[in-house]
Image 1 (tube, rainbow, N blue to C red):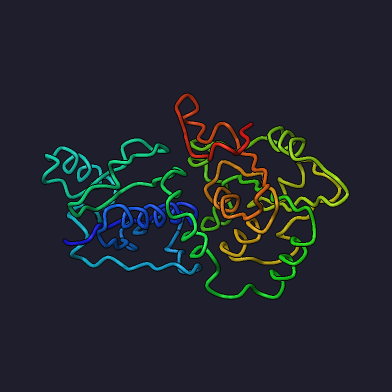
Image 2: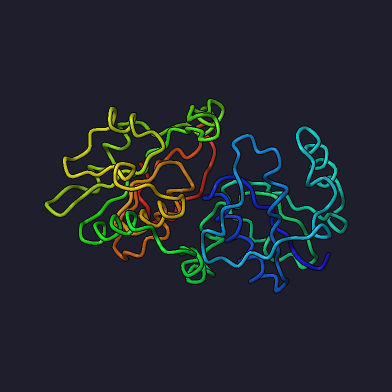
Length: 299
């Protein structure tokens, strides 16, 4: 194995963090990086699949030679692989697991010996040195559909604010809430969104654009200004198109979601205000979760 390999898994926002980590890893280690686009999606209970091809990304795929023993194993055997690889002396360890989620680990970036990287790598410091490159690559690989382009033009003409409301509905399970994900991550309350809207404010040019996986809940529980638009009522979007519409807005109210995190991060307004929830993961509420850039407002 002559390359570093980064495992890709999860939804689109997670995959973007893993891709960004791989690009930074290649930049720092001066060693080629390939991406395992298969192992992380085997038997995915949410029916997720590699999605980065929606962008102008360069994703060299890993071959079998790049994937160490145990990385393709399913539950519970992958836990055995993790214990085994972690117990090995550093000189023989071929798999590097993320030890501290939501924290920056500079040591991972400077490893010269080829390794397989298993984690989510969700921290803005991984992106800083390659921000311009990521901004160019995280653009749509295909033109927007006409209805989505119409929404984008409208967004450009207003003091637009993206609002992302996530309730963990699972499209792969007939649109039902995923109880485990909801309990682990937690969902932002109506009070949070009201406070965020108060923080950004409303004037005659302000339009709030609502992005949500639960349109009925959003309309029933969050009182938005009269000048609000529900994107799901305006156009049918792919995930990447929806994220690009978020990024086109001038300001952002995000949920505890990597999807809207990227929508806000990719926004190019130099004066943008981004409001994010202070508690990012409900099950880690008493731990440090350092995922938001320091200039974002956390409520």
